Image 1 (cartoon, rainbow, N blue to C red):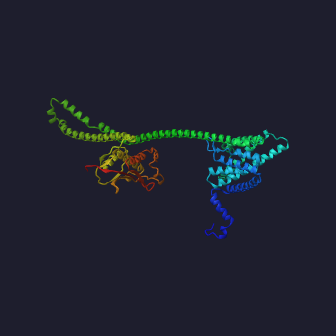
Image 2: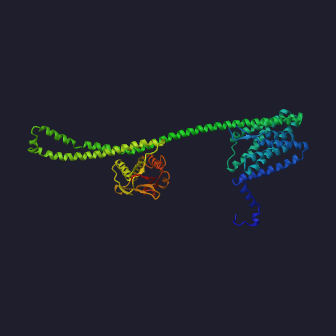
Image 3: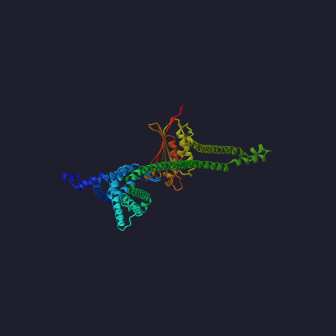
Length: 552
């Protein structure tokens, strides 16, 4: 359509058709739109003929038709919902079927259209449904009713007219009306989706409606037979009974519906409780996994320290002291002459001096490793104790220097790094002692440094560079950066690198960075990552609030 609409084009039927289609049925394709317009046109023609037929009835018959139509419409406002489904039905068809038997297909088609208009107006807000429903109801009732009258007329011509054939014919009519009217309405969504109409699924979904129509047709036939014998008074007397039954069924099924709602609510509550229990167990498993992962990092350091201590003890020079004592015992009687006159004895004082220096060095080295071992064991204890924070116990915050925590993290990683040489650049701002959660920061730094070391494993030792930065931001947050020049991170992994279980390493588990992100969040901060892409390294940034310790 051109941007400038000429007056002649604006008045053309094609333009108006396009405008109506856009406003009324924007989601209809060509087949669905053609069907809708065809059904509306045919239905309008049937309704015009029905109105003409009803208008030609005598006054008493006209009042009867009007009364039956009004009752059918009133029944449409009180639907009876089928339990355990979203479907409902009304008793209006009883009066429509009775009107069919008394005054013919025209009057019944008009009443069916009026009842369908009430139902569609009550259940749908779309004008397409509100327009087509009365039309399809009129078509289905007129065709099915005309077929019933044709069959009854043929039976009468052959002398087979009796109550049994009438009841059987009414039941067959009800089934035909059910199939015809329901198909006319439900076929529209399938045309819109270009799908085949599922006949078996149709029966499974709407078979209950056919049973209801059979019951309505049977009641209407009995009322019609009574009407022929006793007049209108029987029908009038039956109306309160029908209303009572309808109201009783309405409230009975509403109670069933309420009980079903309560049952579903209880089932949903039980499912929610089960899901919460599963989530709780999953959370416990995640906590245990994170704890084991972080304990494993520290136990590598513990293992290395223990091995170093063992190696130093096995290579100790202390057996030399035992040999000196043995020589002195052998010369206990002439120890003075042995130390001053004997060639070997003269060397003992010098040897003892050198031995004492070596043993002192060994002692200092072992003490240093024991201190590192004690520190690592204490860290393991803190990791295990931190599980209590998940149960509501507050984290332990103490005054400390960030640079010392970074050095501890480097020592823990270096002791478990398999001897990999890494050039470390320290860019530490001179910060006072801060109130920090030592454990959470330490486990975060150990994980970040360990990941950086693994990311640089493919590089030659001389090219491995690790930058550690400590500073305060303008907002007063503590910022710690761990940057490497390793394999980098693809853009698609930047958004999920902190997800539980995500890892790119063959021997990884995807627990470390996830636990670090959780720890940062628990400290009121955040852990972020930046990478220019594969082969360009990565920089992890931890930012947390930190107050200065008193007494700095």
